Image: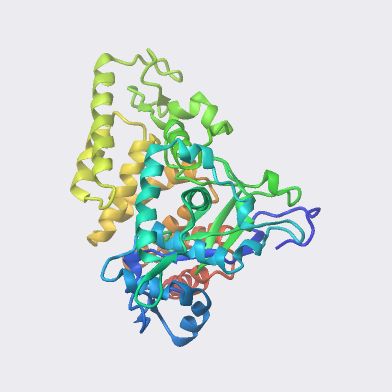
Length: 448
């Protein structure tokens, strides 16, 4: 953490490191990851609750100060799986019950936040039927799980009243972070007090990454000084239209984004652009206009009809592939995009992304390389030049090129990955030390 807010901040500077106030591993990983350090490794169940698992005795001992309060409740829940949000609420209730309300998370030497400083959005949640329904179902789980046992009878519950629970729930859903592994998969949920000072922008100047459960914030632009009122991270997936981004932010965080990218009509047109009917013009075309603004080629009714059909097919196909991408479905969509959707149309980019991941899943490396290379310009445009996802795409392409024995191309992708990940993760991050650098050494060695 920077000790002085007056110093200029260089791109790549780590401006915050923070441990979570509370966090829980997602239940689907509870038999394959450590509940304390979140590592994917061989784990052993807690001998009492048989619900959580640890990679070694040291992790179990570290976790005990928190786990000892929930152990009985988790044991009582078995064989049922506790919903992640219920377990997170349970941990927050227990943290606050045992002095957590006094804990501070520092974002500068003197600036800090306590749990009660986080916005609860109490009024908005109270008027949100979907949230109330979710909260009521969690309340039922918690009441069942956290009832305190007396001698042979239940003597009450640690679950706070509905109003208090709603304020804790509100702070969780609007301040919770998805804790990501090195491949940017969401493996846990965490509340971090200090970083909650940071606002959202669809053009962020900082990025949050993780090492285990520890959160790091790096500046991805040069900043004149450390002024947290002018430091922004993105709360959402940027590979979406302004309309979709604003809807996501309104639904999940209760505010309407008015950043320059969201209020610029040109942004929406570019993200949903058609290809110019003139094959020698690479401009993006607003399908609602009569002609290409760049070369003047007319937009035909047939192109409009084809465009509408292809966009509808692509959106429904991607919607049906939220959990698993199917390569044959992606190929059908991509074939229909030719001559209709612009290469930087966001739905084309999303389809390429799905095709890239699907190709990797089935080991079709040549196809994966083709889709991945096509994906680079779209990722750079929409995620930004300094985004972990762009760095990871370069890393994956480098790995595949290395596997295919294209050593020169492998090294080029890996060097580009290093350039980006040095900024977003820091040179000392395990992703660089344990994955990227050995691959670079291997590529250099094979080129001799």
